[in-house]
Length: 283
Image 1 (tube, rainbow, N blue to C red):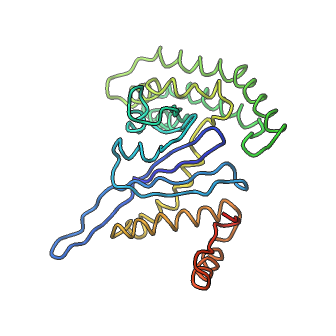
Image 2 (image 1 turned 45 degrees about the vertical axis):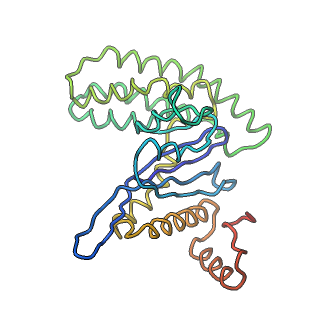
Image 3 (image 1 turned 30 degrees about the horizontal axis):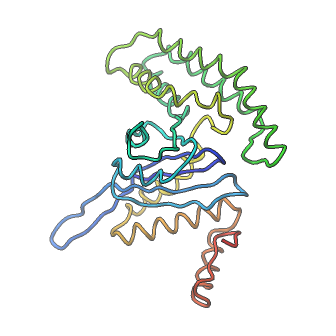
């Protein structure tokens, strides 16, 4: 499983995908283990903390705890149960970390259900209106100082005035629906209602985005790599893959050509060991 994290000032977003570790042993066929990759942290395309991809051996609660680390504030995740487990009251997890949920994942469930339950068009329209409200507002994480403070205040006011009634309408709609156990509609409703408290945090916290889509997009290259070369063939291979995905993604986020950066980094490592820096950075 590959997971990624994107920091937006006081909030962070995590996501994950499957990654394969294919080990070949003499006299045996290939064996595959799902592996966790936990990467990327950044605040905005030009002012970013470097992404970090880590490939870990399972989807357990221990792995989720390692991924979350000492994260403070709010952390956006999907419905992956391990994240919920390690942040429950009394759990041995990061005490200062609370989870928020992703509206894009909720929307996806209802898009799938709409094929057999046309009634989902109503809730999809309401969710679409939430996104329309966000699209018209300045993005605080790309601003600084007074401009950022003003954008945050404006976002909070608009969310409370316009988004809150839509969220209330979505919940009212969900509670009035009748569906068969096991149906796509029932699964979508249960998914949303189980995560409801996390879905409403954005109404009171202007730092929280509506969804995890930015982080989801950062995992696309890993998905392509998994298809092209079937993951990694050794533990060392997972470490190399995590390192190069981290460096390449950092270069892209900071507007640098990844190939040129890697060439310069390799030459610097050979000529003067210990002088390699991150892309567009003196880190």
